[in-house]
Structure formats: structure tokens, C-alpha cells
Length: 211
Image (tube, rainbow, N blue to C red; front, side, top):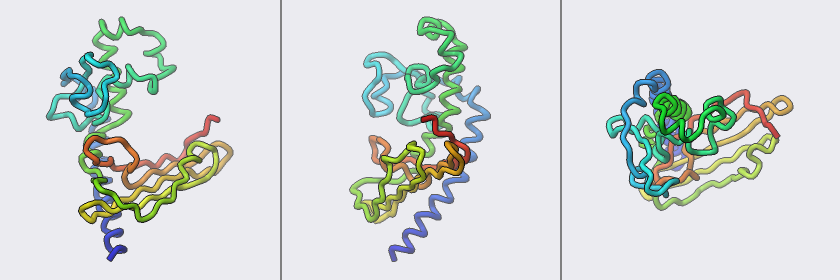
């Protein structure tokens, strides 16, 4: 019975993959249009996470389009977070005052964010409910992530509904610092206010370890 549930869990994930892939392509192509439809709100009131700038309205897509952006961050995250775009021409040449006063800078940054996390809200909506989890398999080698060594990790879990969830991620070094990175299943360790864990779809064959 458990093997049948596992097969079904993998098949269900495999059905979601092409749907999300098509939504990703749609987001990449139409991001210059999608990002025109913006609302402003307190970050925590939309994402459920603490605001980076409490009391400062942040940008979000309007409700009918909201799932095209990341569920856990505002649409202007690419500009405000130091985790993204460092060394890019736009951050090197423009200041916060420029960003606040120049519409096209804000526009470009929205596009950058949508293209970085395309249709992420749909990946969340189709995610796995990790409420009351019981882990059946835990093989965690995450400490080796980006270490330059070949490794893999795998988790298998069952939730309160008896549904199987799984996550496999690995890095396979094939030439010096070049490696293949895969991330399949559901990101079980990702923060989410509603316990839905976003669908993981990543196959990056030519990454490079910069260490």
C-alpha cells in the first residue's frame, strides 16, 4: 500500500510539472505586461511574514494576477533585498532616490523579480500540505550543499490526510567546479504560513561552484 501511495505521489508531482512549466513560460513572456497591474500594501498583511520595512507599503500584483509572483515576498523584492541583483548595472548606477522617483527603474525591477521566480504562487497553490507531518525517511546531507562535493538528500513524509510528500535534491560534480543540480518534489523546509510546501522543479546542468 505504501509503495502504491508513493507511486501516486510521484505521478501527481509529474502532472504538476508541465502545468507549472507552461505557467513559467507565460510569466517570462508576459512579465512586462503583468507587472503593470500593481497594488500597495503592508508586506506582512499579504505574505504573512514579518515586514522588511514595517509601515512602508510594498508592491504586489493585483489579486487576479497575484499567483504569478512569489507568495512570500513583495514584487519589489529584487530592488530592496541585498540577496538579489548585487553587481547589476541598475543597482550600481541608481540610488534609492532614483528608484522612488523613476517609474522605469521600478518597472524593470518588477520584471526581474517575476522572471526570477515565475508563477511561484501557482507552485505554492499546488504544493504539499505539511500539516502534522510524520517523516518516514530522512537522509539529510544539506550540510554539503555548495561544498563542491557530490551529494544527495531525500525526505519522505506523510501528512494528516495520509498523503505522501517527498523531496529529493542533489549536486553531482562532473568536472572541476562544474556540477549538475537537481531539486524535485516539494520544498519541505521552506517557510509558509499555511503549511503548503511549494513544488520543487529544478534541473540545472552547468552550475559552477565559486568557492
